[in-house]
Image (tube, rainbow, N blue to C red):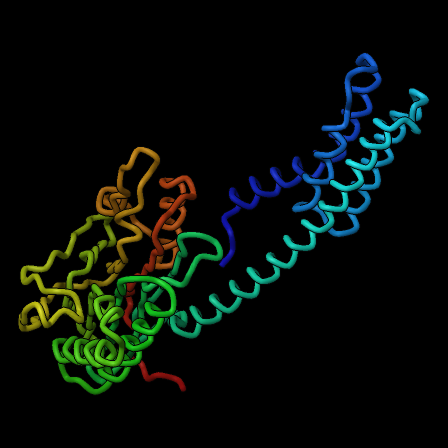
Length: 375
């Protein structure tokens, strides 16, 4: 996923300024020695320069900086004619040792960067495998999905989404598994696998939810007791019958979807039948009942995880999607998700603490769901 332009510019500018710092330190050391009495030493400038270069420069750049620092302190003592004095030799050896340590630090940093890059590539590949991007049009509906990690290189989270066309209509799920890392990925994989099978086979959305419940129960039974308590997920399931201007929704403890009409009007689809998250049937059982809402042409349904609604600014104020989106119209679902991601980034000052999954479904003004699908 590409970094935002502002972040790339700020990072590039900071790195450029830091990149010239070692050179400036060496030059400052020479000027300091030239314009101060002989009793003052410029050694700190020459020792800091290679240490600053170590994490920023290549191996060759670090070596050159170290040699320049040693040459600089040597020139200082040659100027005073005391290069053979014990104090001068001590200072030159000190700078040389620090330069050698800088080369070692450079190697360690580069090795760590390589490991981090490999881990990030593996994490991103796993994320793409578990959460493939849905097609832009499914069953006559326009679809857009977006996954925003809390930090670059962060662990894979438990946010999930999936969209499936079925004989009963287009069905989808957006959810959030408790926890992070491999345990969360395992639960996400179980939920998505169970959803895709159930969406195709089950005649009702309520039955799909129950299949997911049983799938998580089997997963919890397969784990030890310490992990079992992590095996629950908030989720919202939706169904869009083919050729019908309505949607059915089952909410299992998840943030309520938002219905954005073409004129900018917004409705928050709060459930009238609260239910526990998936995987918590041992605490009580409530029968799932889908709630139906109109879904007219030009309207967009937004599903999201709490990474959106719980994003905070520096004062602790939450991002409020209902207030931010009311009265606004977007040309399509992708534009909506792009706007949300950018606004959350600005709201938090690029300091998000939770992953965010977004899924938007738009019913076009001219539905194509009745046309034959081209395989």
